[in-house]
Image (tube, rainbow, N blue to C red; front, top):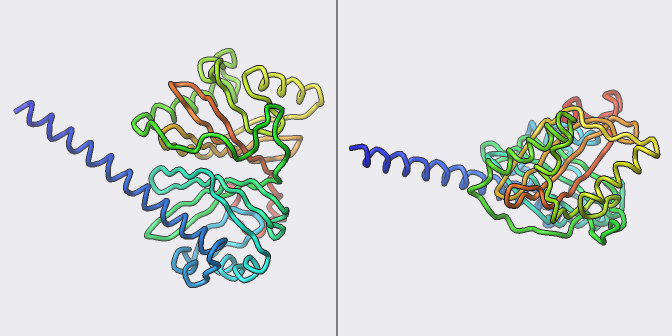
Length: 282
């Protein structure tokens, strides 16, 4: 009887894991289709089907609801904008896209790097967050804001890898035990895609010292979201950067229990009275 119960429990666990993966895959498909309708096919009918009428919008330059986005499609088409998704991960109903936009003056720049986050419910995108910044030259190690590993691996380690990044934030980023940095970041391989930071722990520490010497602040105050799939873990945080209230969207790749690669997009937060919606950045 005990063996039978274990077998049933094991089958149930596999079924739940399979269901969660299938749900995340469906959410990915909906998010990808929504982005395609806006930036590739410029299909207003498809966008209307895929975006909830009462969409909660956290892009501070865009009003809430589907109508503003759907109404923008003709202008997007005329602008010649193009979008490339370099990485796409999902956990449950949250989907994170690492995007590159070209001919994107309508969003504030010709060439932009972004993280877009979608919450999917009932077959529609019901909430959207993003961070967008201008593309800058490669970092001192020759890395761009988009290159690097794209393959999702180690799905069975999703929770473990999420814990690694959560611990890194708690101990190192929030200063509770900064001496533990090598418990979280690999001393052998640390590939950095921030334009101002070279590869390796030495590159990171040199960049931090240079910022301090220049009187530039970078302080994380609160992490609002962690989304993980396999070897990739995304975090959305707020704090201070260059003496401005800002958001930090970070994507980490974890391998063998250590952070080995990092991408990020930092964007200032507008004052409430300057925002096009009342949803807040988070």
